[in-house]
Structure formats: C-alpha cells, structure tokens
Image (cartoon, rainbow, N blue to C red; front, side):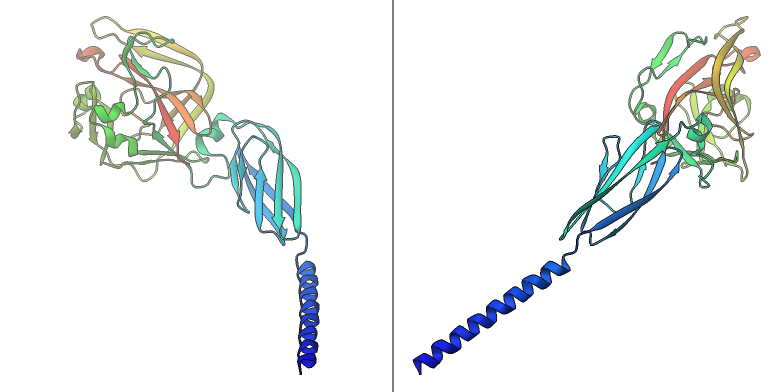
Length: 311
C-alpha cells in the first residue's frame, strides 16, 4: 500500500513538472518582442505624434530638445527652429524596440506666432500676464527708447491698482485676419482722457490715468498687422506747446478695427509688438493723459507690458 502511494506521488510530481514546463514554454512563446513605429505632423512650432506599436506596455519619447514624455500620442511644442532627432522606445514583456526620426521645425513668422499659424482655425488667445518681464514699465515722456520710467511694473500690478479682472480678458487673433475680444467684466481698460472726452460709461476709476469703461465687443472685428515698418506718432508732454514726433523704426505693429481695441482703448489704437515668441508677447501701448484740451488726444505715456498665450 505504501509502495503504491509512493508511485502515485512520483506520477503526480512528474505530471506537475510536465505541466510547469509546458506553461513556461507557452509563456515564452506568448511574450513576443514589441515592434514600434511612429508618424508625425508639424504645424509651425508644434509636432503632433502618433505611435504604432504592438506588444508594448510602456512608451518613452525623447523629443531631441531635452524634453521627454511617456504616453503613446503626445503633442510637443519646440522653443526653437531646427532639426530634432526624435526617438520612441517601447518596452514589453518580450523586450524593447525603438524608432528614431528627424523632425524639422522651421522658423515661425511673427504673424504665425501671433495667430497660431494658418491651420489654427480656432485662433490664438492672449491675456495680460500677471508675471512681468524685465523692463516692463510706464514711461514718460515718450521717445523711441521710451524715455523716463514713470512707474515700474511688478507682478500682479493690475491687482494692486484694483484692475485684477483685466487679467482674464482674452484677445484672440485668427490667421484670416479676424479678431475677437472676450470681455470678462463687462468693460475694458481705457485712458481716462479718452473716456472723459468721449462720454464713455465708467465702471471703475484709478488714480493712474487708467479707467475701466463699459464695452460690448462687436460681432465681427478684424485686425491689421505690419512687420519691419516705420511708425511715426505725435506725442505730447503734459503742458501746452509740447507736441513732438516720435518715429519708431523697424517695428511690428498691430491694430484692431473700430470700435475694438487691443489691451488699452485710447486715441492711439496702434500697438507696437516689441518681441513675440510662441508663448509670450511684449507690447508697447500708448496713453493720453494731458488735462489740456488742445493736446489731450496725444499720448503722454507708453506702457511696455507682457502678454501670455493660452496653453
């Protein structure tokens, strides 16, 4: 009886060994090595990637600019033009595979940076930045180098002036020349002399020559843009007989159609774009604040300020 028991136990052990071996062989056969490929489309400074992989559990993208990602289908924005070697590596139970391709980013034109490029049918949204750039300030009197600092800018300066809602306003530029302005608090920033002289409905005042007046954006608006242009502006000091011309050379300018405005509603509707990247724009806007009627429509101050693009 004991002998029969030992024989049965040995048979069970042999059968278990065979089953384990078979399971191991099946597992090895099922853990096939991963295979990967990917495709991409470039739109301005943005590359849209789509991976094609089998037997892959993890994804590791190297965009060639020091940035990485771990999802199958990323969208990546490049800071600078150039050729970038992009590598996608996938890992599975059966091993690892990778694919490398070169992505070429061509320089964006300033117009494409402003609007998001010809394929951006939804337009590009800009807002006044809560974080200033070095040199942002209010200047007076105005000259091509901006003159004397009247009031340095600092982070959240509009909040301290009681104008924090203006950070939420959206200025939207479309590649087809259409312009849209989303007003969040029923009004927009306006020079106080412009508001007073034109009988605008005042929502809020400040002691710094900036008011908020009621504004309803028109249904259809456009904008004009010029690059590497010369712009001459008649300016004034805050006293009589103080008119003088300032000429800005080789600048970019943008102007919204009436009655729309960009950043500040005042007599001077042209805004100078001092610099622009895909996510930041620094602009020069002008304010008229002389209390002398004969020259009250001429700018006395220039604002150098930063806007950020919606991400």
